[in-house]
Image 1: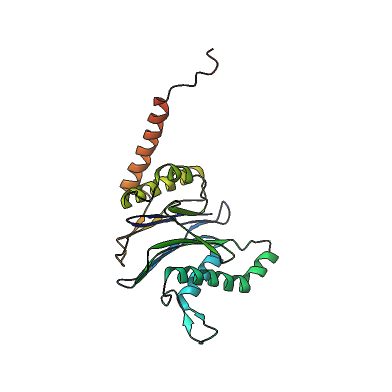
Image 2 (image 1 turned 60 degrees about the horizontal axis):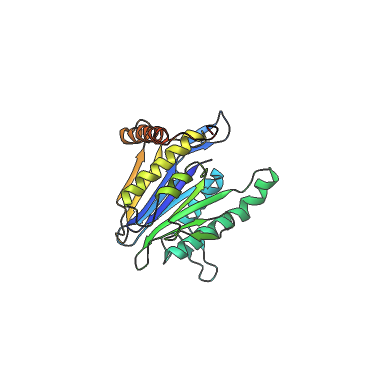
Amino acid sequence: MTYCVGILVDEGLVMIADTRTNAGVDNIATYKKLHVFEKPGDRVIALASAGNLAATQAVVSLITEGIEDAETGGLETIWTQPSMFKAAQFVGRAIREVYNVDGRSLEQQQASFDVTFLVGGQIAGGRLRLFMVYAAGNFIEATADTPYLQIGEHKYGKPILDRAIGHETDLYDALKLGLVSMDSTMRSNLSVGMPLDLMVYRRDALASELIHRVDVGDPYFHDLQDRWSSALQAAHKAIPRPPYGND
C-alpha cells in the first residue's frame, strides 16, 4: 500500500508520495513513486503511483520509452503529449497496454491488477491541471471545488484536507497541510512510510520550484509532527466536556 496526494490551488500544485512497499511483514522496501518529467519552458508533469508495483513500474516505463502510434508508426511518449488532458489519456492508454500483457496472468495467480495514478502539471500553451487515472484508464480531474486528489491509503489523511484545503490556500500552506495529512496516515497505517518525495510547482512557471526528499529524521518534518500532536491535544482539552448525564 502507499499514500500519494496532489493539491491544486490557485498559486500552483503540490504533489507528495511515500516510498514504502509492502509484500508482507518480512518484505518491506523503498521505491520511488513520484516521477517528474520536466523540460523547463516546455512542460512539468508529475506522476505519482499506487498499487501493484510491477504494474506501475511497467506503466512508467511505457510512457517514457513510448507506445507505437497505430496511424503514423511513430512512438508516442509523455514528452510528445500536446496537453495535460492528452497526457492523462496517454497514461490511461499505457495502463490498458500493461493490463493486456499482464492483467490476466495476475488474475490467474489471484493477484489483482490494482493501479492508480495522479497526473499533474502544465504544458506550454495550456493550463495547470491535476488528474486521477484509474486502473481502467479513465480519469477524473481536480477542480476549484475539489482541489485535491488522493490515491492509496487515503482515508486517514483525508479529514485534515477536507477541513483546511481550499482553492485559495497558499501554495506552501498546501505543502504543509499535505505533510500533516501524510503524518496522520503514517501514524495509523504501517504500510505507508518514509522517506517522502515531494514537488512544488508554481502556476505558469513551466519549471518546478521544489523537488525534495524528506528522509527519516528530517528536522522540519519531525517538528511538524510534534507541533501537530500538541495542537490536537490542546484543541481537545479546550473543548468543554459533554454535559450528557449531568441532568
